[in-house]
Each structure stands twice: as C-alpha cells, then as structure tokens.
Length: 477
Image (cartoon, rainbow, N blue to C red):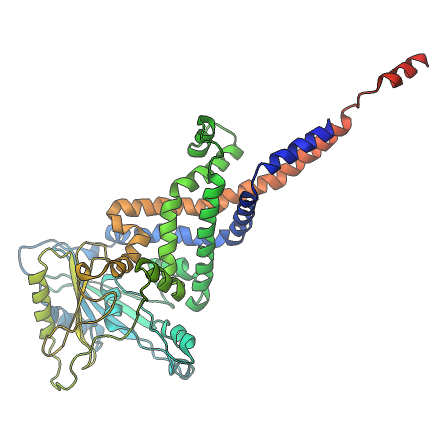
C-alpha cells in the first residue's frame, strides 16, 4: 500500500514538464526575492496615477471663476509675481482653460559645495531649462533625456549627467483675469518634497538616493516582468475543458481561505498581466539607459536613439536686452495657432543664449501629444531641434511618437480616465500578488509538512496483510 502510494505521487510529479518545473522554481524564488519592492512600487504607483485628480479635488486655489474676458499677458503676471519672490526671476508661465489658475513658475537652484562642484565639474550639465520649467509649471512634461558621452569616460559622464539640478521649485497660482495671487507652493526634489513628490521618490527609488534606489527598483521590475511571463506559463490550463477553465478564470468565493487566496493570485494575475506588462516595460525606461535605447531600437526597426540635453540657442550676436513682452507675442502666436489647446506653457529665458520655449498641451493631464517649440528671444524666429521630444507630435515618426507616449502609457492616461482606472486596479492587483503568492508558499511549508507527517503515521498504522501460511501456523498454536 505504501509503495503504491509513493509511486503514484512520483507519477503525478512527472506529469509536469521540465520547462514548467523550471518556471515554477523561478516564479517562487524570484517572487520571494522581489516581493517587498514590488509591493512598495505598486502601492505608490496606485496613488500617483490620480495625482492631478486628487489635487484638483483638494486644492481649490487651482481654479477660478470663468470670465468672458482675455487673460493677462505673461509679462503682466510675471511682474506681479516677481514682487512676491523678492528679486528671483520667473522661469515659466502656464495658462490653462477659463476655469484654471495661471501658474508662474520659479526655480531657485541650490548652490553646490566645493566637493559637489569638484564632482560635477567634468561631466554634469545644468540641464534643459525648458524641460525643468515645463515640469515646474505643469508639474509634468519633463522628459528624462540623457546625454551620450564620448571617449574614455563615456559611462562616467552619462551617470553624472543624469543627476538632476538641486533646488527649490515654486509655483505661484494666480487669477489669470486679475493677477490676484491665490497660493504659493514650493517643493524641492530631496529635502522637503510635498506628498506626491514623496510618493514619486518612493515609487522610483524607494526613498533612497536616486543613484542607489533607481537601479534597485529597475532590477525588481525586470524580475517582475519575468514573473509575469512565468506566471502565464504556470497558469496555462493543461486541458481546455469546462472544469479546468472555471478554475483558471473564476474565483471560487465560497471556498476555503486557502483556495480563495490561490484563486486571487492565479485569476487576478492573469486578468491584469497584459496591463502590468506595459506598465513595467514603460517604467524601465527611467531606470536603465540601455533599456531605453533597446526599446527605441525595437520600435524603430533597428534605428539608434539619439538623446541630448543640448537646448536650442538664441542668436547671441544680438546684444539687445531681453524684453519680457516678447514672451507675450509668443503666447498670442500659440493661442492663434492652437485655439483648442487645453494649456500653454511659455518658458522665460534666463540667459542671452536661452530661447523662449512654448509647450502646447492638447488635452488636460495628457502629455504625449504636446507640441514643443523654441523661438529666438530677440527675433522670434523658430529654432528647429532634432530631438525626440521637439516639434509637433503629429509630425513625429512612429518610434518618436511611442517614446513621447511612454509616460502616458505608464500611468494609463493614454486612454484617458478609463486608462487611469485600469492602471490603478492593475497596480493594486500587482501589490497583492507578492502577498497572495507568499501565503500560498507559506501554506505549503506549514501544512505540507503536517500532511506528510500524518501520512507517514497512517502508513505505519496500517496492518500488513498476513500470508495464508502464517495464519494457518497461528491457528495450529
């Protein structure tokens, strides 16, 4: 009886192919290794998806009563805001719809110590003013462009160039009709972030320094992609019959906790895997330069990604002092060419070589189809740039359009509010998968040993059938 039971168990084990057994082993140990990081990244991602919607609900200074008159011009709003900022100069002005407050953005760069200057002297660039002001004004829109290093210290220079400028971002919310200051909000990337900046720091780097936390998150996300693939392999029904299909696609809510937990892991993991795959793949663009370039190479059928932080330059031979009213002309031009725009950001030049930047948002809280322009600060001649993120979205090639869509794919906004809801629930399921998976493993460790021990005791208790000769001998005695 005992030997039959053992051989029967071996037969059951042998039914699983070597490939599936390898997938099961990878799924288990990689899941246990990356579980905590996946939970943190998923939960923070859930919250960050609805950043704008939450802010719209709790921050009433972001809105004004609509009026049937024109907005004040950038020069007028900046003149008022500069008085509050005591000598600091504005970097951007953002206009939204008739109900939205205008935002005058400032960036006060933190002065580096001698040690920091020594570290940054060789390779670190100050960054693209347009990108920083776009992020400051709209709190989005900044592309993580990375320069391509050359020569012996290419990797070292690339890593240093990825360091972001340190300082304080200040947004002054103003009534665009009257110039009344509604609120002043400041945050820094490191020392004193606001709530959503804190959430983002956790999402991208586990609240560690970015050069440490970002690769840790990146490796965990790569592992998560492997878990998604191995999970589908393990989920795949051995036979497509009704009883097995029901177990694969439905959660048996009236079963034991152990069975419900298994179904939550198995079934919810299947339904969310496609969405989680796109979320993970798009997120890795910000973790690894090689992934970013490889993804572009794949979508462009073998063309390399040319990235640069070099910004457009105004003609510095023109020695005239910049007049703030020139930014007014750029806004009027953008309004005329884009009457249906959801928002327009105008960047203010800080140096003679800086251009006036214009960012035209086609949809609220959506950034992939944004048009970006650069104009000479004196002549207002448009300066063309060969960059993935420059120019009109409609004129970009397919791989550049996909790259522009990366952020919106990651948070689901590429499909509007519906996409954000999908991304929210997919991330919530993602956070639950390591927990339900751990409970499955723990249950096998805890109850599996008890079952094996009980089976062993039961086997010993079963009397072995005596032969006929032995019985006859016992009867004669």
